[in-house]
Length: 516
Image (tube, rainbow, N blue to C red; front, side, top):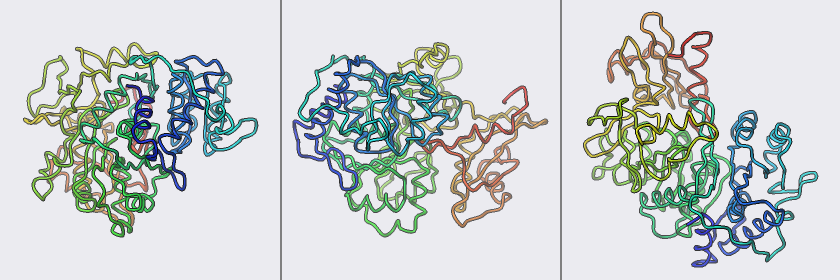
């Protein structure tokens, strides 16, 4: 079943249920079907063939969400870029992905102009929310009221969306996904959350990325999606109570902001059932704090653009041991494989690692088979031994849960020994003054690499570097202790909230003939 079929199915069952809510706007499932038909009919009237790539530049906006479904109704391939990226990065992504058309929101008009200047052949269809120069707004551009689009071929292997990798460890790559991969991902997510009925779903993270997979999955159950266009802690906390939200996904960086907000205890969160954290590991101390503040609702999901999540999941129940938080070994894990994934830990020679032995996390499914766009060498490299290689180093426990230790490229080799930066980061973040930590290797003439840490403290907090070094020595041993620690007001982050370790690391390796 395609994403658009899920919308139609829900509209048939509960036509008056709100599909999307934003501010004072509420669009029912029945009305969403009408609007997406008008969008698709306009696309078809222009002679645009199924499979055509359409660039999409929009923050979280109800018109943008309807446009996405309209493109899929017409058989188009959505090419979303995260509007929180730099203009240069998005222009470079779209140059590689070669869309034929562009639709944008007025909030990112400057970005759209930059993209069009660098891609002069790109046809701009409309501005989503208002008339802009010669461009009509979406409401004036789409087909007249009541017009319906012709149905397109129901091919599970037809391309659906061209995603971009996050680029946190290198240049962003394009990954083409099919209707089948979206369906498998949606069923994985619903099964992992044990969701069988409509939910009220808050969308704060960009709907063009991982947050969108929650929309696509929960639409199968006729859920209502409440959109926010900014990650403002007070607004999020208030909306959880006022809209009686049941499902929410946020990256850890935003969860830390909620926990640090003076408003966090002013609201009730008793309707929450699943508060999902993903995009990066969450430190144990704030995770335990979140369990106290929001209740027994925290859930971990692990995914990548190449294998849309959840690949693994740690359920709310697994976060607990009776009324207390689960043991550290469980809380630091990403859980076990979801229902349609095989996930293992592999040695370099293709053999399986023993319990507790570090290796690369690999998986096999019907989602990660997608190849990188126009990059056969990279595609072959990540599909070795018949499994997709995530690039993450992990270890599996006796119950099949996996703990991530590092990105493969981020393992620090100092004096011939491996130091896993993720473990050092977790240790540093147990200090009450530390908001977030980034650990990586820098060149050292004696040891090859030295462990280096960059720290972002909580607002108004401070700590001596020596105190953090002592903490790591006591908990992990001297080998893992950073040789130097620097403090910054804010760590550089990608548009999805991931810390850009490569930017911090790069300045130490400039001018050298090696990067390890």
